[in-house]
Amino acid sequence: MRLTGLSQLLKRHGRNVKVTKLQNSVYDPTTGTVVNTTEPFFVRGYFYDSTETNIYDTQVGEGNRRVILYPFGIEGLPIPKPAIGDIIEGQRDKVSVWRVDEVVSNEKVMAYICRVKE
Image (cartoon, rainbow, N blue to C red):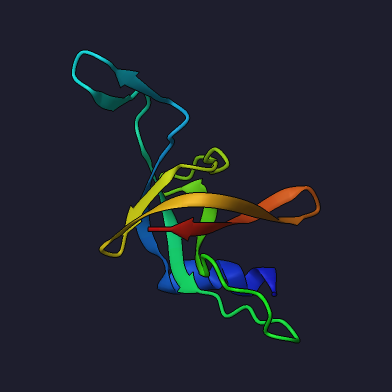
């Protein structure tokens, strides 16, 4: 994967998505709800389906949906690395992160690739 291609993909075809950090949530026992203690942030993201295959077709695919996130928010500030359980909303969809990989070039994060599930 070419890193310049990844940046161009996000610029041309990405959408503004909302990321809500789950780790900063607190359960309120009086209301029985989960309350976010931080504001969500907005970032360029691109949803896609991965087509992973193996040689013998012996593995059952689980969670082949991914979201590529630009490492800077729409206002230009760095975003925190997404974590397991964070919620990504956009493109008429709401998904939960269950794995995060970083694309890095010379110590600089170029993108986050999040494996997500509904």
